[in-house]
Image 1 (cartoon, helix red, strand yellow):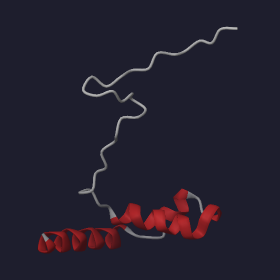
Image 2 (cartoon, one colour):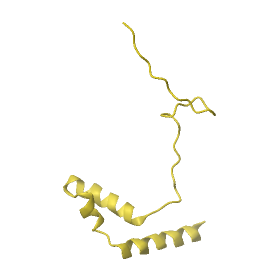
Image 3 (tube, helix red, strand yellow):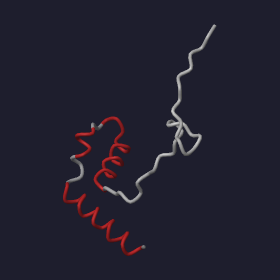
Image 4 (cartoon, one colour):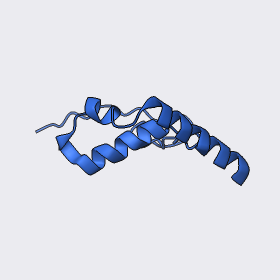
Length: 77
């Protein structure tokens, strides 16, 4: 009985395979509309489709929240 093993690509700078390679998380990127949609979808669960969830927060509110985040980040650094 023989077992076929698929080759694994290894990152040249380390011994980590592509599947194990650490991924960078963009912490400087903040989008209040996406955050609100995620929170609303989590609260409402599977009853709400993505298209309905995106309409629960309007563009003006998301822009205000994004600007508030930028100002807060600027003054707390």
